Image (tube, rainbow, N blue to C red):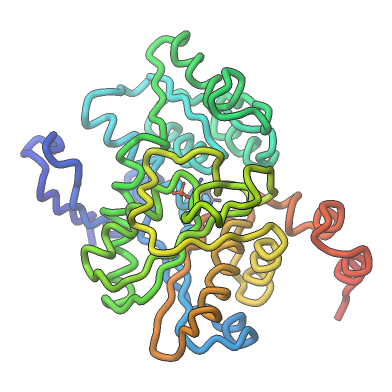
Length: 368
Ligand code: PMP
């Protein structure tokens, strides 16, 4: 079984048609892959059993396991796609330097692609992001620059400001810019959304997606609504962020929170909110609770934003009384590898006020 490429809109040389950004290629797993980026995507769809039973859910609850991508997150998809598209358009050449301001996972996806395909990589990363992410990026050969978390996005000292300054001063340096790059939503339109539809045999009622840049929710929704306009796409936005609509959902205003990779203090250009039918807000406590439950009760080694999406999905199902015969798909964006010293650590949960001292002691001492 080889990689079956069906490039409807590509020219004979494999160049993209400038009039059409899509590459309708069905990426099938090879027996032997050319490099690690071939393994990105085609992630499994897995039924949520025990949480559904305990929470009294009667509809079918399915999880799209983006955390099983080779770099540990959904952002591997855009890392690969942004580099490949920039190569095809002639914007970058092997040996160039790629710079990306990122909360970590896009950096890992890009750094993995850069390592496999021969680019230098510089990542600007807000301090809040875990040491694990930073260490993995450094191990992949990237230069990592930490920036203050509280700095507004348009400040020269923010992760975005520093990246822009480096692009100006370094030779052959490019910011592929996940916030504006059409490859971000496109890869989810061309691949993730289509995969969800195919894996479900076309039977999908609701899809629940947490939003950061919004690339995932925009691309997935555009594809799914084209295939079946009845599919409802639900956005998940943490309290402290302002992505949700209507705006009164964001009544807490902009403040910091502990879940990583989702929510912003500005609306990224790749987020097209007309494709989101309903937004739900989540808080850190329920997000970490559900992330820990996904690990403990389902054996799914996910990160905090997966907990956000699952908590929101459970709330949605109860609020809308979604019952038997309906199917809800939840996107699980990244793996626990990024959070080994964070929410899976009982002391961290206690120190950050998410569990009581007694709970912490009980959990830490529990034996058979
Ligand atoms: N969860 C995690 C852990 C992420 O890193 C991201 C990407 N920032 C998302 C969810 C949201 O994905 P998107 O940027 O496509 O909205």
